[in-house]
Image 1: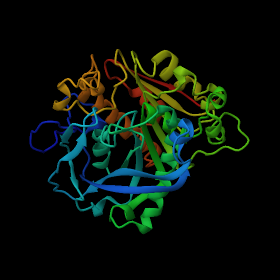
Image 2: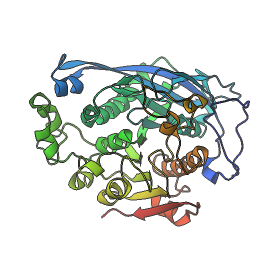
Image 3: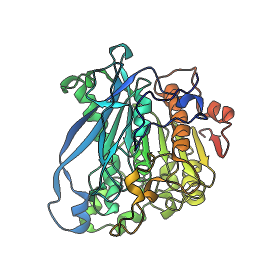
Image 4: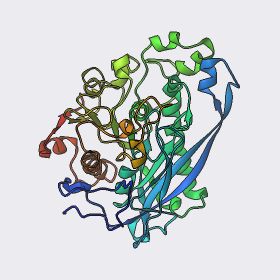
Length: 398
C-alpha cells in the first residue's frame, strides 16, 4: 500500500498532511470521515476541584463534550472544524478529511472504538489528525473535552489525578449505552467489545490510570482532608479501589505521559497494568521528562507487553499535536509564550511525526483491537521498525 495524498483543496490550517516519505500504514483508508458532537453528563459525582480548594459544592453534574469521528460514505465534502487556539480566546478554523454529520459508510461493518484524551490544557481537536486517519480505516474515534483542562476552561491540574480516569471510564460506558439509545446512526454501529485508548501528556497519565495504574501513597496525605476519601480509591494497594481496568480495552497508546517524573505514578502501581501499551515520547521532553518519566513508565509496566517509540531530540510535543495553526505564529502577551510553541517541536516537522504516529497506531489497533493477525504485534513492530531518527524498543510482560 502506497501513501496517497488527501484529495481536498489546499487551504490553511490543514490537519491531514501526508508526506511523500510517510510510513506505509499512515496512508488513508478506504472511507470518508464524518464527525458529530455529543454531550454526555456524569450525574452527581464528586467535584474534585472543589474538594481540593474547599470552595463550592462537593458534588455536581460533570458534562463532557465528545467529538465522534466515524467512517463516512464517499464522496465527502469536508467542512471546517471550529476550534480555539492555545490562548483559549482566538478562534481557529481547521481543515481535514471530515464533514459534520456526513452519511455513515454502511459498507464498513461495525466500527471498532478508539477513545482519545488530550493534554493539560488541550481540547478534543488537538489530535484530530489521528482521529481522522483512523476513521478512514473503519474506526470510530471519540475525542474528549475534559472539563477544567481545556484551553478556555482551566482549573487546578491536581484535580486531574481523579478526573481523567473517571472521565475515560464514563465515556466508554456512555458510548456503549448510546449504541441502543443514541439518535445518530453512527452510534448504532459502534463495536465496544475491544477498545483502544490514546492519551497525550495528562491524557497519557489518564489512560495509564484508567487501565490499572495506581498513585504513590504520599499523595493521599498531601491532599486536603475533604478530598482524601476520593483520592484513597486511587492509591496503591488500597482495600477499596475506586476503579478497575476496563477489560474491553485491548491496547493503548500513552504519548509523553505525565506523572512518573514527579513521583505521582508509582512503579508498583504501574506494574498493575496488563494492557498491551505503546509509550511514545521525545528524548528531550522538558515537561514529562524522558529518562525519569517516559522511559521509566515503559520500564515499570512490567506486567504488560509494551513498546517505546522514541523521537530522537524531540521535546514534549512529539507526535501528538496537530500542525501549528497559522494564528499561533502571533505572540499573545497574556499567555506568556508564543502559542506556536504549544504545537510545534524545535527539531521535528509536525506532519512527519503525525505520520509516524498514524503508522504505529494503525498497526497496534489493527492487531490488538481488530484482532487482525496480519498486522504486527508490538514485538513484530519493533523488529520491522526502520524509521530514521526514531527508536522502537520492545519489552515483554514478566
